[in-house]
Length: 435
Image (cartoon, rainbow, N blue to C red; front, side, top):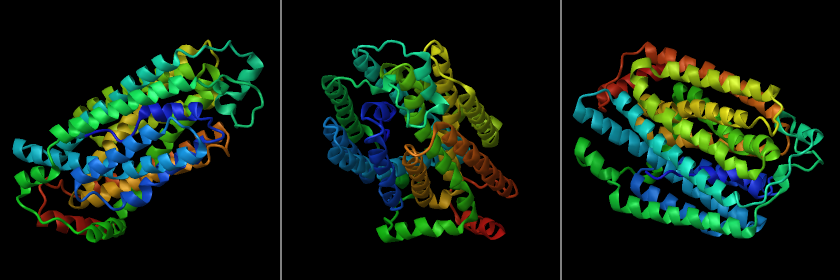
């Protein structure tokens, strides 16, 4: 399924649109609008996915005119498109993974893990090619001279968005280069829509093969089930996982690219640094999908948490300089190692734990991940970078404690079969009662 966001677009947005003026105004719109619509849950994954792609195509076509009165509405369109597209993608992968597991005689959760690993391999690889294109296009921008040492003090963790000194982030590419880049992205989006319309198997066909004919669930019933799921205490604990996922992605795409990379090296290096992140994220995604059946998801979560904590502490202590070029790539690569855990394991965990109500679960997942983006972009211009790093450390600590409690509950119950049935429903109710 087509990815529902544009990694190169998000990584350049803070530097390209004049972050202090427009970035915080538009980015929360992108993140906020998936929130209410995500709860509608994709009862028809195929139709919702096509709807989401149309909204995002519109956003790409209208982005060249970067003004507040155009950027905010198109950001809302992008958010409206992302909600059904992400929820439909998660539901589609879970259903097809369980169907494949049933045919192959394997455990459903292992096959779902592999499916999400393959998906995020392809999804994150789009960041490699997209950032490569953007770097080649923006590489035509004349480079600035190396900034004096005293002007670099406002970069990195010390950036409070109140510095009066000039940095590399103030140089904007020509409008012709912006039009060229967005034209390439729009053409890629059109090609993706055509490929999916031609080759993607409708989700109804997949369900018909494994479960026989099923009556479609009414929209209001699906919407109500999304909110009813909060009676399950496991969901109340697991909402911190997508919340942190949104926070850490928001930090990387805005604070790291602006306050570290663009501020020190210039906008022409943002793409190359993000290529390292996307490549590492893509390779680790497919790797985690394979090894999770041997190590278990808990080991991978610990790996992701330790890696992110190490990066945050190092970013607090590091003072970026132009001659530290390799360090910028090391941080983005390590961030990708950890992000691959949150992307693959979070989605697989929701699909396995809430197997009987996966559509409602994934709708809630995207709701809280969108809220994480809203918070990250919302306080972007009000807090210093080092304060944002402390917030990430605190939220990550709470997230791992909550996740550990859910794992303890899951370990006290027998492994559920992947095929839905009455036994599964009774077992789910028993878990909720114990919680």
